[in-house]
Structures are given as C-alpha cells and as structure tokens.
Length: 166
Image 1 (cartoon, rainbow, N blue to C red):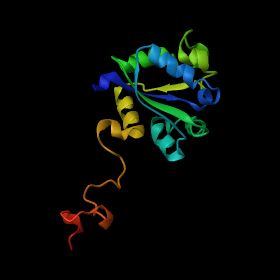
Image 2 (cartoon, rainbow, N blue to C red; image 1 turned 180 degrees about the vertical axis):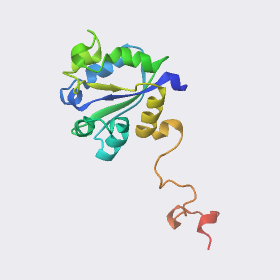
Image 3 (cartoon, one colour; image 1 turned 90 degrees about the vertical axis):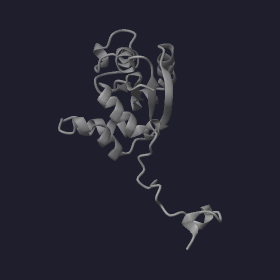
Image 4 (cartoon, rainbow, N blue to C red; image 1 turned 135 degrees about the horizontal axis):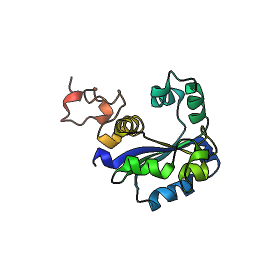
C-alpha cells in the first residue's frame, strides 16, 4: 500500500463512551475508506506521551494525555486514495463547535478538547502514528524482545535445529 493511501485515525474516549463508535465507523466506510486495522484499546500513559510528543511543551499537553488515557479508544488504519486529506475533510476542524455540518466532529464532538476523533496532520505524522500503534502493518514488530538471534528453547527444537545442539 502506498503511504499516501494510508492514515491513522482514533475514535477518542468521549465518542466511545457516548456509544458513537459504530456511527463513526459507518461514516468511515460510507465515505469510501477501507478499514485495514481496527482495535479497541486503553492507551498507557507512556504511549500517549509519545503519541502527543509534538505538543509536549504546550500547556495543554497533560490534559491531552490524561484525556486519551481516561477510557478506551478505537484505533484504526484507514486506506483510501489521498487518505489524509480525505479523512481530515470528513472529521472537520479541531474545534467541534466550528466544524462544518455533516463532519464527524460537528456531529459527535462537544468542544475543542472532546472532539470525538483524531486525524493525522500529514504523511509524516501518519507514518509515525501508524508505526506507533500498528507496527506489524509495515512488516516489522517494535517489540525489542523479538530478536531473531534469540536462543531457542528445548521445547521449540527438533533434532535438526542448530540452536539446541550443545
């Protein structure tokens, strides 16, 4: 898949708690996006801090982290031609009160902070966010313990396995 055809999306805690996830997913699919990955998760504080790292020096950083870790979210990898601008158009501007009618944030957000969804700002952000939440999407695992050079255990060895010979 071409990177211009992929973006990261998140249905935030306010929309999940309000039981609007299904409606938002329906809008995603009806607007021509293919959902490549979807998972309901509770984000750890460390991951949230890494996710919002670009806002670390801003006064609202702590609130962002606290909000996104306060309850489950739904994370998605979306595929469509020009996925990033198409997703940004569908979700609307950040402030739900200023979002155009028919956008996700206008319909399901309540204000600047509780705005129902997240959308990657550009291709660099999309790549970073997709790698952060869906490392397998790009053919590698971010888990440092998955080193191929690890010794195998006797349980995993057959007679021909080099790793089990003494």
